[in-house]
Structures are given as C-alpha cells and as structure tokens.
Image 1 (cartoon, rainbow, N blue to C red):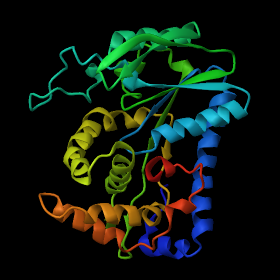
Image 2 (image 1 turned 120 degrees about the vertical axis):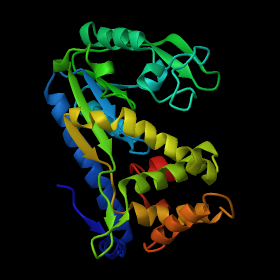
Image 3 (image 1 turned 45 degrees about the vertical axis):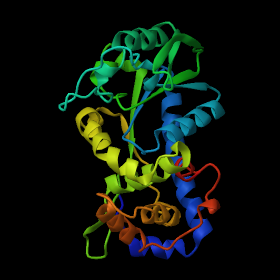
Image 4 (image 1 turned 90 degrees about the vertical axis):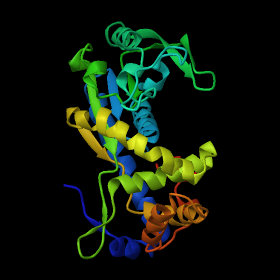
Length: 305
C-alpha cells in the first residue's frame, strides 16, 4: 500500500533537513538493492526489463541495480532501447495528426532487437547498436556484450514491458520491473495537491533546463505529447511487471521548490502562464531545502544535478 503524504507532514520532516534527505535517499537505494538481491538469487534471470514513464528515475535505478549486482559478485550491463531506433532516414509510422510517431514501438527495429536480446539470452553474447541522436543514424555492431555465469543485462526504456519486445524471449530468463512516481501529495482535507504526473513534470522541467538547455516553455509544450505516449504505449503493460518500484522521495518538493519556482517565474507571458502560476503556488507551500545537501548518490541528483 502506498503511504499518503500531506504537505504539512513533509514540512514537519523537512525541519531536520539533512536527516530527511539522507533517510529518503537511503530508503530508495535499499528498496532497489532488495530487488537486485532477488534477481541475483535466481541465476536463470539473465535479462532485466526496466520500464517507466518520463522522469521516473529509470537511469539512476538501473545504475543502482548494476552497483548492487556488482557488489554481489556479478556484473550488470545496461542497454537502452533508444539504441534500437530506426534511422531517421527511414519513414516512421505516423501519429493521429499525421506526424512521425517517435514514441511508438514500431519506431524501433524490432527484428534487430529480437535477434540481439535473443542472442544474449540464449548464447550470452551479442553485438549491439548505438543510436546517434545528433545525426539521427544508428551505428550497428558498435559494441559487444558477453555475459558470464553471474552477469545480467538491464534493458531500459519506454517499451521494455511491451509484449512486442518481450514475447519472443524465454520468459524464465526475464525479470520485469516498472518504476515510477506512485505517490501523490495531499492537502490536509484529503484532496490532491500534487499529482503523480505533476511531480514527474517538476523533475522533468528542472532536468530539461539544467542538462538539455531547454526553456521551461518548451517542457510545457512537449509534455502533453510525452504523456500521450505513456498512456498509449506504457501504462497498458504496467501490470506485466514482476515488481513495481515507487521512486517518489518525500523530500523532493522541498529540494526542488527553489529551482522550480525560479524557472516558473521566468515565464512572463504566453499560453503557459496560468499553468506555471498554479504549480508555483503549490510548491510555495513547501519548506525549501538546498539541493546541495542531497547525498551525492541520491536518485534526485538525476534531476537537480
């Protein structure tokens, strides 16, 4: 059962700021470590399929899994499904608006994906591509992975739970993980203050600005397309996961409030003013904590830097 958090309860914990951040970060790492322990205990599990929506923390979760498996005496290799995209020179499937649909599973080279993952599962060795997003081209046979007895591969991406991707693989060798923000933040009267999707948007907005030099307006602009892709291509397969991991950190609205509010206030006009003011007003309710106090290995560093 997902614990219910109110902003007052979070603010009470935020009084002891460093302890609060440390406890949140350690709790998440410990939960991911227990999943890694389960995977490693079953030597037949060779491929971990890790899916989740935008800004759920897939990359850092994969890193935590890898670190734990390495500590247990194995080795984990991470592969992104993005590397199996079709070259941009190929005509992509169209969405309902007649635009190229880069989110659909058919935007990947399914045949190459099946042969690569199948070779890893059955033979323990495969040559894998790397997609160059600058040129829009895929470099085939860019790297080779060879699995040994205690090794696993972590396949991370939006479609990692999609049967189109997994159904040709031996299910006994797969372990499926779904990671997302699965908690909301409530007002004291029980109404929702910040939804799961809003919490992910705040993460995404900060990350886009800090790591991708993307203005806040652009994050607002593309968010509806991102969430449509999740609704259509991810959420229908959520229940196929062997385990779900909630990446919500109770401290995150406190840690992210200052950065997020500054970004939201930079919107002076246009169609997103009302939305930005709404999120701004909600975040203003939280006690701000300097994100520099976050442990260096916190999942939230994926977004705050």
